[in-house]
Length: 240
Ligand code: UDP
Figure 1 (cartoon, rainbow, N blue to C red):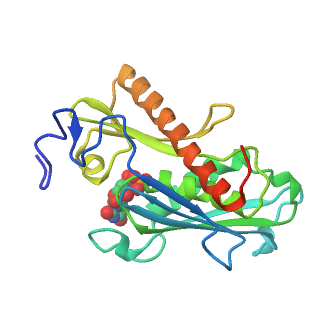
Figure 2: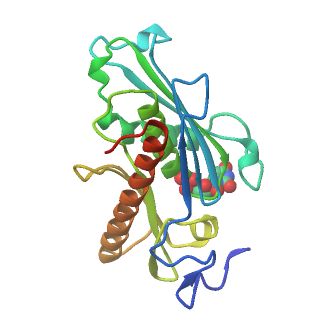
């Protein structure tokens, strides 16, 4: 057993943070929190605290990135040095590059980039405090920031993970479960069509466990989607 690993993750049906196996961590979303960004969002999701800022459509620099037929979508995921227990070295690293890439790939299918040729849409995701699941938190925040910036999109993109601890499939891992559990499966979807725009997996799952974890993560995405819509309705009013 690793240092810090709990003997059991689920005791009397409750997880170590008191949640049921299919329960999300508390999630609060606020749209429009930064004056100088075109759109922004602040999320608190369990112990994750994340800001997303969207700029654009705007001029593309460097110019060679410009596309004649569409906007380029660029995503920058950054984890603050103070966001984790062991100080994180500032600046980009392989992990942040990978998360920036999968974030862009999760969002690109919904953004109507063809409406803004020769421009850039930039999204900055700053992790202020991390408690596992920051890529899902970042994608969820980024899509609200895009909507807040008035960028035309087919849909919002909610994200949520499921995983496995103590042989059980659980929703939305927090850090102890993520560090010492057996699997983590982050998923992002386009709710209206059910299309999947992010699917990654750490650890190992049997086929039937994978199916159950995937289904649970998708159900989590739909709950997150409701919160995204609430945040936008709170700022702008109106319906769906
Ligand atoms: N983490 C950390 N230091 C790092 C990177 C990650 O402590 O340099 C923690 C942080 O809590 C993060 C978790 O490990 O949320 C899981 O990281 P992972 O790479 O699985 O991505 P995430 O689950 O955040 O999308």
